[in-house]
Length: 111
Length: 113
Image (cartoon, rainbow over all chains, first blue to last red):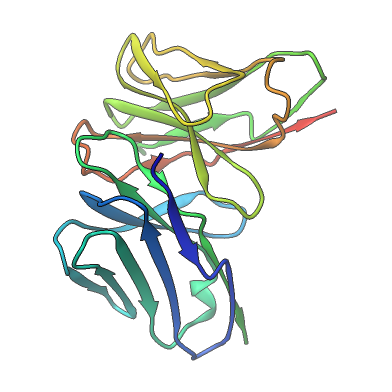
């Protein structure tokens, strides 16, 4: 079955440092979504990428979709304490209704 | 406010007992989903439903059952056949278009006594 792996599993950074999480799928994806889950909360949708090589930005967050549509990344510039949480990618195969979630990267910020 | 309501927030089950987790949405979404989240892990799909009176198994359906008698409701029953039910359960919904984002409820944390 489809597998979606994320690395790293955990990341501790000093406030102000950058952060990147990588997502890799075993199969080609039709689209990929990113979610953020705050501690004790539920996942909240951040963005969706559809096109090969697509890059989207949301303030300090930059999302990329690989040329082969099998990998993606989320980069946060100059982290802030509000960025704390677990970031999940979720990929969908062509013709498939299901989203497969990645294993997540848990970000903690050292003030 | 439109959203997804899960209840209860915390649930305790005795071994051998079935329990039902409630999920209600007033977003008029067609599709609804149940996920299980274990500590340090991602979300795994249990069941999903794209339309009333129809549902499909996800990746870990064994020991669970669902119903979709109304568009706004998608209850999940954790049966005694589920040997390791302690987890955080999340319900989600989305518009019919598969490219739409999923909206999640606040979750139910199930523990075994």
